[in-house]
Amino acid sequence: MNTDYLVKRLGLFLLILWLASTVNFFLPRLGGQDPIRAQLGAQAAMGGASQVGMKDMIAEYDRRFGLDKPLLEQYLTYLGDTARLEFNFSMAAYPTKVVDIIWRSLPWTMTLLSVTTLLAWTIGTMLGALLTQPNTPRILHYVLPPILTLSAIPFFLLGLLLIYLLGFQLRWFPLAGGYDQGLLPALDPRVIANMVYHSILPALSIILASIGFWTLGMRGVMISTHGEDYLLFAEAKGLRGRTIFLRYAIRNALLPQLTALALALGNIVSGAVLVEVIFQYPGVGSLLYQAIRSSDFFMIQGVVFIVIVAIGFATLVLDLIYPALDPRISYTRR
Amino acid sequence: MATTITQEQALSELPATGGRLSALATGAFRYMRRNPELLVGLCLLLALLAFVVIGHALVDLDKARPLSTRALQPPSSSLPFGSDKQGRNLLAVMIVGTPQTIEIGITAGVIGVTIGTVLALVSAFYRGAADVLIRGIVDIGLTIPGLMVLVTLAMNVRGGLSIPQMIAVVAVLAWLFPARVIRAQALSARERAYVAVARLSGMPRRVIIVREVLPNLMPYIVASLVGSVSAAVLASVGLEVLGLGSFDSVTIGMTLYWVIYYAAIINSWWWWWIPPIVIIIVLFTGLFLMAVGLDEFANPRLRRRA
Picture (cartoon, each protein chain N blue to C red):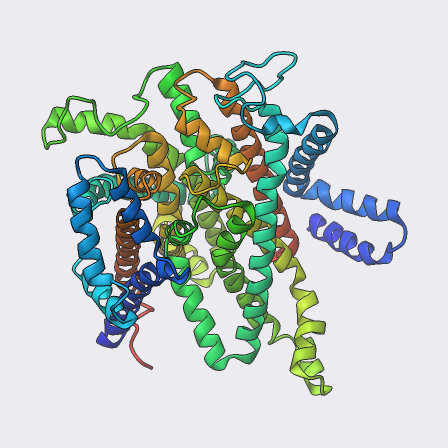
């Protein structure tokens, strides 16, 4: 891979980070009145145990982002803070730092998202490829309509139905949470089994609702490869049907599917956030929900920024491994 | 092969039957029979429309307000859908909320597709710096998780998003996908012979775009409108479920917010959550099937083998 492309692609990633933090900084200030300052004031006025801390926080906020400072200086301070992932204290859980809370939730979301996305992508892609083969078992064709219908339904709505059917009525799975109360999340086989057990329903709602998208996409690409010269040639060489299917047809059709994956990541995470909310899963989605309910601006900004960075990074990785999979794309200058 | 012929017949009959409604209906019906997705999708959406229209005529819509009914009543003859914890008549809520939710989707979707189409045409026909800029914004914008951007916008609106504000927020990102899809089609359109002929005959570029290219892109624009409406409904419901909608608005998304807020599912208040879920499923399935059907109409080459 040539460095030109690498630099360009990294630049794009940094541009996304800069845009995200700039929007985070300017939007609250657009209305003239800073809603963050208003919320800090409201929190302090409510009083309570953390009131002294809130006073300190307001003083610190005013010192750094006070109205006496020129906007540019405030902006540069903010960019510097964001670069160090310094999102201030959580307004709702003072004196815990926003980053610390996010780091605690991030592994839950990342595990749930990566496992479900990989499974849905693999199952959907295989199903889509098989559907274009003439000797595919009849039963697979009956699976398609329900799978496609499910893909039209938002993830979280399917989750609500699964909670009711498999959780509430049949009592097969827990209704909410990431692990049993009383357990501490740790790397102990029993605890891990419990966490997996809790994650089955949220995972199922993401997988079932997204398989159809990949099936439809793969079927489309596979149909368009029918009759390509390289397939005819493989057939003329006398290769076995299975070899042609796996090594020739699927291998080439996988590339557009991978591009689609990179493009869909943003939508998948948007859907998964709501799934976490309805399952009260201890990831960043639930964190965002709690932060919105308590108007915890610093937490909202932190979660939004970290999620955008994470998805931007995942897209970057996919884009960088793409030339390794497709020798036709070398990203060298012509 | 036989299907291709009927397709062409159906299409060629359509313009010829201009004034005669019955012949047009027959042609449409014949086309629909080969495109069951479009038919079923249309029927689902019409059923939703019928529910709303009949409901507006029969039900007292003031009962959609909180405290207008006894709270948490299961369905009965006087309260067919029961009531929620805050004393709303849920039948009235569904009848008021369904068109509100659809209105958010259609308005934001139309805004998105209009802006997207204009930018796509500018990008495809004027190229240069405008193209680089528009393509760059679309490419970056589509990889960013949209809900996160919308949350950032919404949290700066005090007191939750009213319905016009919700439309405005959702429309901010709604133009990205139409812009990409229509730009690709416009790029292929500009290489077609009819554009070359128009150019050679001395037609100005503006006029070519509006009078020649735009009508030819209409099938794609309509198809992407259906997708945009569905995406806009999804985004608005998502924001409302996260608690960013106005607590005064009566929409399907706000009903789902209250369902989750009061944990209606594990409290066995089944009449509260079944109607909004059914309405959302009917709406999304209807839009999805229409999108699939319209896609086939717009892109005959995509048609699957029988």
